[in-house]
Length: 112
Image (cartoon, rainbow, N blue to C red; front, side, top):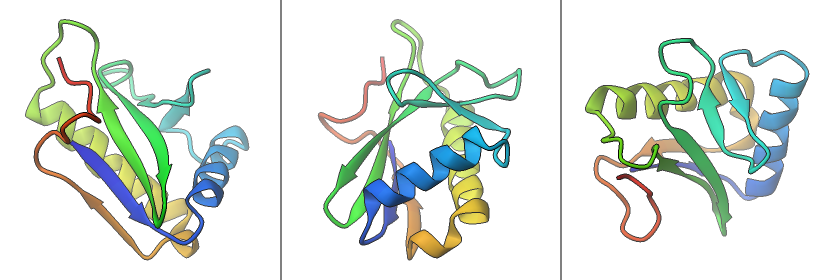
């Protein structure tokens, strides 16, 4: 399960979104020392993480879950949908298309 933002500057999009978090413009997402994003709303915080990976013409974000925890469809939907919404709201001039996969991406997702 992944989110993709198609852009000619994936590292620039990532840096811009992080700067919006740092400046307090994005308050519903945080990132940790590894650069992974988690939702900050109390009911969703720490339920999953999105790991950003610049890949050629896109910024990909692959989902991570806690070891031994099954990722529910609700958590998947919240994380993927709300992340796309937030990036579209705050960085709309930095990408052309945002999309989410429906199933795990082999070798990329870490869903236990």
